[in-house]
Image (cartoon, rainbow, N blue to C red; front, side, top):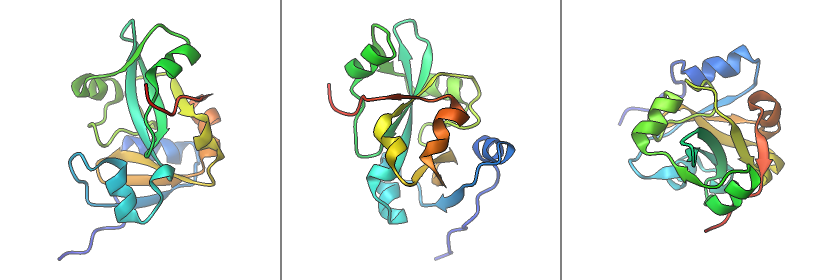
Amino acid sequence: MAKKPTHVSETPATQFLRQHRIAFTEHVYDYVERGGTAESARQLGVAEHSVIKTLVMQDEKAQPLIVLMHGDAQVSLKALARQIPCKKVEPCKPEVAQRHSGYLVGGTSPFGLRKAMPVFVEATVLELPGICINGGRRGFLVGIDPKILPELLQAKAVSCAGAD
């Protein structure tokens, strides 16, 4: 079996990180349809809690927004809506998410988005020493310091981990 390459060609996300002089590490894994963060964490040997998913959501006016959440947690849509504030938040359909972000679902990165969107990050993500987050392609995560997210993405901290 061929060895998996350790480097992936540039993506809009890695270009964005390089332009902003952000240090990151590259982590390649075999993408599994519907495998999610559990599969990437297993293959990379990291805690799923530190693998951060990038979720494209929309408010009641169909305005898109990004939520960054621990891989092993769900977003409480009610808690999120109360904090951002709006009446209702729901996930975008895959084709809508792709149109807004410019990325395929399963490869969505919060960096180098096609369209500027507000970014919300679960507050406890910012407390981690390091995170793995999508690098703009399925099967590709980048390791970064989460403390850069508020300034780099104007990400607002929210407490919305849980279930509805």
